[in-house]
Length: 282
Ligand SMILES: C[S@@+](CC[C@H](N)C(=O)[O-])C[C@H]1O[C@@H](n2cnc3c(N)ncnc32)[C@H](O)[C@@H]1O
Image (tube, rainbow, N blue to C red; front, side, top):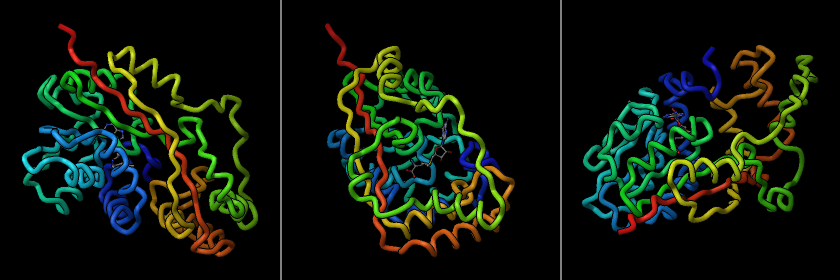
């Protein structure tokens, strides 16, 4: 069984196919990609990098906003994700580089990139190394837009509390696993500090020579049906521990989902960050 949401998992054909199908059927990754692409200010761009671009959902959003002459380079370490993306997207203005984000500067003209966009991935990377690579790749004045899942950044949009209409699907999954399979969750780790809070991002950006331009905690509104589809992907299925097979996880998911209704609203929080390579001073 592939490690969940780990680099190896992304590089498996079945996972890549399932992920890409999800991005086509549900607005979640499209919506966050469009938001970032808009914030990156791409109207005059010649060369834009889609960092950790996966199967191309973010590249699609970038291509919609750049001028017709602009080129987009999608960089990801998982060849399987890129195989799926290549098949689905027109290669005329988009090229694919299979490489870790940390080595971006080895694959693009140094100082020649107008913008770097990274949707739903940065916390999986070695951020000090990635920020340094982005700083080398960007031209002076070039922009870097990325987002961090609310749990990883330690932020929560107020809509999560106002819109909430019952226990989350995650909570129900764990309850059903306990009820039907005797599952006991692992003891809570003593250190529950967020993995990538804004204070850490700010310090790491400064060390890399990038200036923080804007941050915002955003709320993404979806439905229980979308959340169920997302939790059906082997990369994200729960419980992650307890030695369950994927079939067992899907059985637990169905039972948990039966306790909800498809249209129940779901809110996901994101910390959105825009940084810039400062203009050269004369
Ligand atoms: C949730 S997907 C996001 C893909 C795309 N940006 C989108 O919005 O659909 C996360 C991607 O990050 C990639 N990834 C994770 N760590 C990486 C790293 N250090 N370097 C390059 N890619 C990485 C994975 O291979 C995967 O394709």
